[in-house]
Length: 159
Image 1: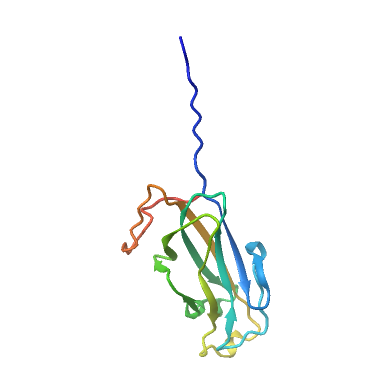
Image 2: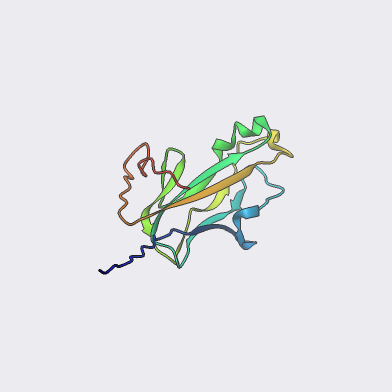
C-alpha cells in the first residue's frame, strides 16, 4: 500500500489602479484627484495607470471610465469629454488593452481630459467626477476577440 498527495496552487491576477498628474505625481486611486477652477477648453492632466503586480500572472486589462455629476444639466453633457486614449480599443463601455500585460509592468489609459470649448455658463460652479474601474483576467488559455463588437472577453465575469 502507498499513497501520494498532490498540491495544486492556482495562479492569481493582481492589479492596482493609480492616477498621476503633472502636478501631483502618482496617487492611489481610492480617493481620486480633485480639480478646481476648470474652464471650457481646459486640458486637465489625468493619467490613469493600471499596474500588474510582480507576483501576478500575465493578464489582459480593461477599464471602464464613467463621468457623472449630481447636476442633471451637466450630466447630459459629460459624454462630450475627450480622453486622449491611444493603443486601447473601446468596445461596449470598456477600454480594452489588446495585448498581454506582464507582471511588474504598467499601462496608461490616457494622459489628459479635455473639457469641451462649447460648454458655457451652465457649468459655472458645478462639479463632476470621473470614476475608473480596472479589471484583469489571466492571459493563460484565454483568447479574447478584440474584433468583437459586443464582448471581447466572451461574457467572463470579473470578481
